[in-house]
Length: 256
Ligand SMILES: CC(C)(COP(=O)(O)OP(=O)(O)OC[C@H]1O[C@@H](n2cnc3c(N)ncnc32)[C@H](O)[C@@H]1OP(=O)(O)O)[C@@H](O)C(=O)NCCC(=O)NCCS
Image 1 (tube, protein in one colour):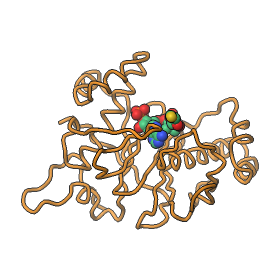
Image 2: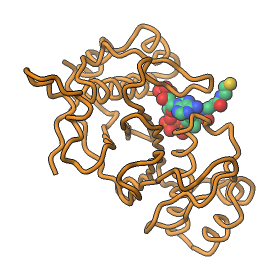
Image 3: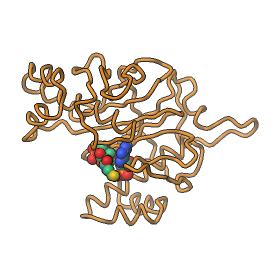
Image 4: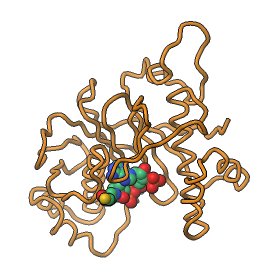
């Protein structure tokens, strides 16, 4: 399976959309990239120069660690989109939906970004909504309460039947599947979580029912990010059908 580097420039001659080229031969039109938010100080300093002034300003709010993570995450998003579109990362403009989902003004591709700890993941696809979510798999107070009050009864029953690590992973698997869908639609977490009913368990990620939509129009994929991070991607009507486990590639962090 050959996937072009996201930074390869468009070949001379007959123009072909950079996005199509980047995914041709891969058997899917979904790209998922990962990057580490811990980067050398020098790189972080240079990365600031590819952000728009309002992005730099927003990143600068908060503690230094938050500042670095926000700045690097936005640079990673720009690099991934620049590669998919065959454009310099600093030339990309964003528009925001009323609930805050970023998009390209021309809608050439849909994309979604998520961070957890020092992990950043960007998902990009053609002209259909996509959402991605990643979460660190850590035991926290209150997870059982979230399951009882915000998850659907069938999800709560499936998670409740498990113990220990399996239960924790099932919780985060379920959460990331729901959030990936809610980010694909742009609704975000303001929408009730129990209206999106997803499968629990590693084998077959899928949306089982939607309170206000047709679940069969959507596909879910699991991201393999190791035992400490759960991840899911949701996409509407992918031509390839069920997604299973979607490959995640390290993003080459070249700024120019
Ligand atoms: C989107 C949301 C689910 C992200 O949750 P999270 O787990 O904290 O963060 P993640 O790292 O997974 O994702 C953050 C990214 O999601 C994207 N995002 C923000 N709002 C979004 C939305 N409504 N739909 C899809 N993606 C969204 C942004 O790219 C954001 O990155 P940025 O802050 O660097 O711009 C959460 O912030 C949310 O529910 N927002 C909507 C709030 C809302 O409805 N506001 C109403 C205003 S009227």
